[in-house]
Amino acid sequence: MEIIGTVEILRDRVYPDANGGDVYVVRGIYPVITDEGLTFWRMEGKRSTHQKGPEFVCVEAGSGLFAVYPPGDYVTDEIINVDSRKFTESEFQEFLLTDPACLEGPEKRLEFTLSLSLYFT
Image (cartoon, rainbow, N blue to C red; front, top):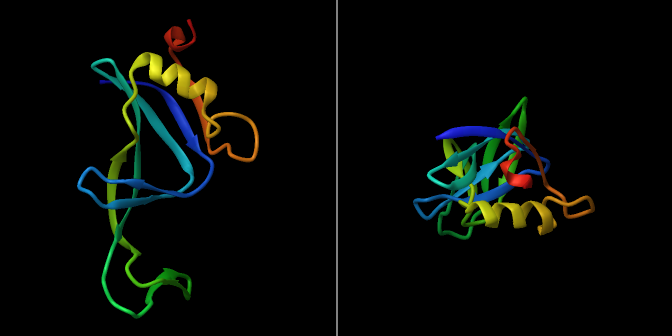
């Protein structure tokens, strides 16, 4: 496993967890990793919990602020690591060059800084 750069996540978002749940990831800079020919980034976030019931959930957000979540979904305080989708070298190159999340414009949410030139050959 080798860190080949960073990705700056420009917008908070929810990523799927390997255990079938969701993880709420905040904006920030995270490592981009290559491992056995696959490239991905590893983020830290809070687990999202799904509960049944008709009532809204109120969770303290800090500094006297509270967040209200609709029934069935709210973010816990449990911090976990979550990996992005894993890309082959060619898939990652295509992702960087064509996905709106990586391109300038209103859809952009990822900014990569890579240390290896092999992705731009």
